[in-house]
Length: 189
View (cartoon, rainbow, N blue to C red):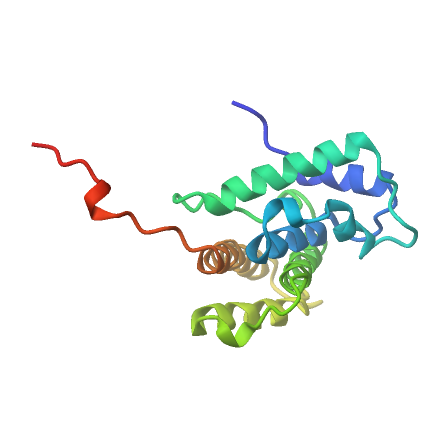
């Protein structure tokens, strides 16, 4: 089985070419863009330029890695088993940077949704509008200084799960699967 691209690998590659924001934000932007655009219509470096101080270096190695990330992400978002997960730092990373990365992921997702000209949130279901409102609120997520670490860890895990499912639901609504034609099904006797 092929190893999936990890957060640290993506972060290193993005930093190497001048991307100064969190890799989680890039992954969120990619997920948002995949929700509203055809995969091949997404300029993978444009998502980078949004967070770079200088124009991103466009090298073949990074392009290959970003294409791999796009394919893996699209497969996960499209999977009926709901296997998608936002690309975030590992759980052994301190809580504050993980919360910051989750907030950045949500910000990126919103940026990606807005990448399609004419995207109209009012045409989405109430559930999708609520998820997007919640993601907007999550862009301001922070850990309190005197918070109980066990409670905060639990809350973080719940938020990650909400973002995981919410992003996939938004994707699925904006990319409905074709209904099977009953006449095409084979009957088993």
